[in-house]
Length: 110
Image 1 (cartoon, rainbow, N blue to C red):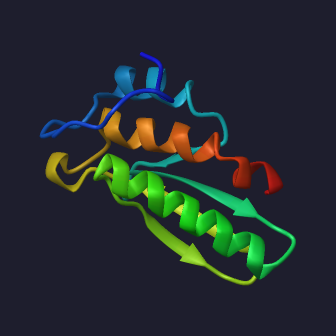
Image 2 (tube, rainbow, N blue to C red; image 1 turned 180 degrees about the horizontal axis):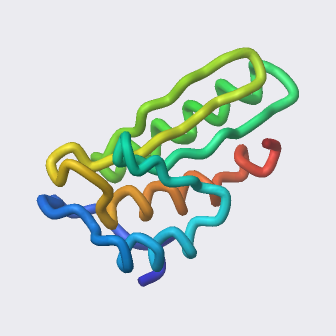
């Protein structure tokens, strides 16, 4: 599956351990947090303007995919985390969005 072209769909079942490892290999830089049942990545920037441009670009993906991350925003850092609440864990949707966020031109400034 090409994650950059994929569309999120309703997910009710979390990925298993082996599946999870296969999906993680497709999104370098994203780290799992098994306790919180999420994947996250920290993006660093030179200034607040770059952070906000990135946040707005992430919002566009979230809106288009109808799959919304948790974000922590500060002056030069944005941490993005994905989890599928309906699956009570990680689903393909989290990896689709993670790949698309990583591919943003704004992410290359990080």
